[in-house]
Length: 57
Image (cartoon, rainbow, N blue to C red):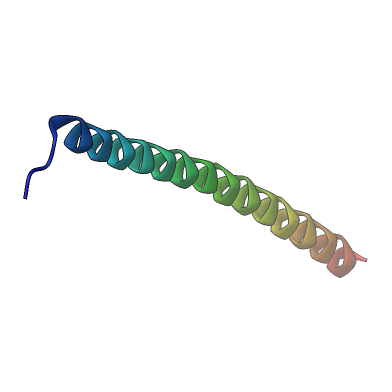
């Protein structure tokens, strides 16, 4: 069976593009996850402040 060089090139380009898209998606997910975690930490800090104020009264 004969596989032309351009078919191999096309396969390499498709694989490279797929890996590139996966990397971008993972990076975006990491940023989203970090933003959610920071918001969660802020909420916890606010709850601690509210509890401290409530205990002081």
